[in-house]
Length: 299
Ligand code: FES
Image (cartoon, rainbow, N blue to C red; front, side, top):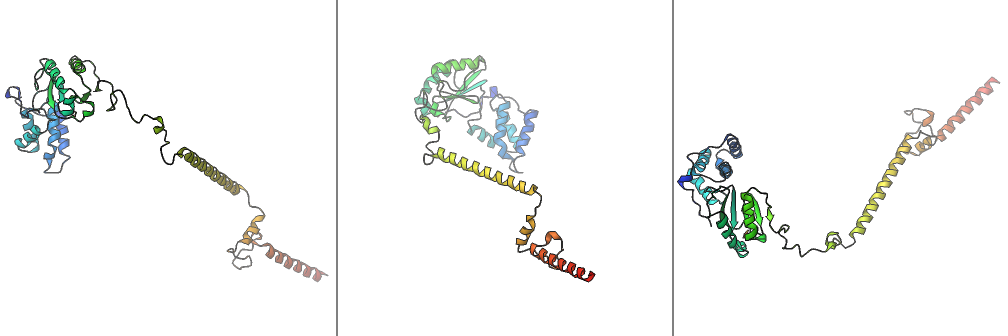
């Protein structure tokens, strides 16, 4: 476990101020919190200060954050020294955090510490070229691929003394490196590939439901297609009927309607189209009688 102390005075800068862009960012973070609760922004501000100051927090930065938030410097110091995400000592361009907790230790982390000492130097010191520094840390949550190390923001897993040494040299010389497992395993599956759930039948859906889901789905699709076709045919038929002009059968249809007023009603217009065949017959009889009467008068 690393000791959480401020860096020696010899490496502490005299002052710290956020640059213009970061000052603007800081104000935006503080504005997220209600009046009187600005101290809630302390961790984002410390993180931004560390980012601006080459990856570590000097005393001046801690005090600048305290002033910005109206906090006692000791309160901010307590936070900066508690969380290991804040580096209190200078770090290299590539900051190696080597996990030394039990699973990684059982898988060879001790040998990796020796590589760090040989390639970089003592813990919490920066290599002469400024490229590398290292620190032993507690579990980083990738025990399944132990042993591992975090370098800046990336994880490197399944490390061996050989591939770890080569990795550090590649980083030092700016060569491209591979993140994640160094032995090519996918995710956290067993070394050499997956050993379970390999039956392709597990992935064709046959284990779902009663085992005849494909037949059931086919039938459901067929029924849905037939229903859609029937609906489309009915709609087409209805449109066709609307487009057809009214025919002689319409009066008969109207007569069958019980709600329609009778043509003999005084309020009902006496148009021929509204008269029933029976009524029309009476009218025709009456007209014939009138014509016969007129004919007799003429005689
Ligand atoms: S013990 Fe090393 S990552 Fe968990």
